[in-house]
Image (tube, rainbow over all chains, first blue to last red; front, side):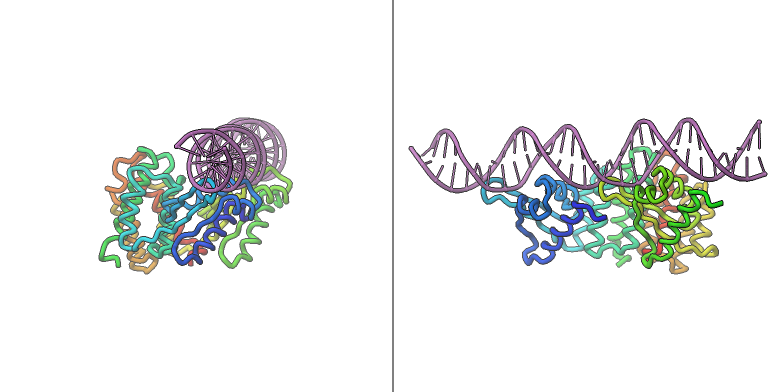
Length: 156
Length: 156
DNA sequence: GGGTGTAAGGTCAAAGAAGGTCATAAAGTC
DNA sequence: GACTTTATGACCTTCTTTGACCTTACACCC
């Protein structure tokens, strides 16, 4: 059931979890070799799974001695929500990015599982389908409202 | 009586009954193969038999490694959530009624304070303002989706 | 310092692998 | 015979995987 992309993601997360410094260095070719796949598959995994919304930053370098540098973004929990709203949400938000962000907030223990699932139910395409003006606009608005609510001091 | 749809339903129920987690993962193609039928027949069964009203929720994923995820909902017909759901069927929902409902669910300890506030933020007039088709319609839809989520057995 | 060879990683389009939808045919039911 | 439920097939959308081709960095040589 677990496809290649998921297995590669798992592998990278594993290594990252064991990294003292919060980042790891990998080589694309080596990784592709380990999983016997096309090198560009690694890019696909990085592009879809190790996104900023999910709390990762990827840098790379080409040429001899090239590498991939994958970082976990550590932000203090207090600032995380505000940061998310400013940097990541904006006026329009796709389901993919919304889900990535919720995943991240859950991993940081800012949301409970139930809270995350409630929010996913709302922000899903099926939930906001057929809406005017544009579901990405509404999604951004609702996400901000929910996160703002969680920042209220009386909810600590 | 033992038509194809009924037999497929029975098969899925059987597997689901043995699932600790309250959900199962299946593949549409595999299932269609087992019963030598068109894949869309599986959708027919899911659409007619594994509905929210009957206590199930279905999610899916396309593409390589795709699946169907069929979840059981905890259903107690006299429960507050079920009562609320019945009222929402085919209905529209004002902010006042929505808030009232959330209040009761909180008092009955079905919702945490945070959950209640998240849901209020979503269902508020300011949240759904300027939306087409009609904010009361959308509010009912979103409320139903949230309540359904709360019934998922895998969130216990 | 400027070629140039080699060793990385990047991009993008197309093929493949799922599941979804909808109109229509077939089978039951009354 | 009319209505409802079930079943199929053609066509669509989404997600994954691959491969051909491109760009960047370094090393080495002259």
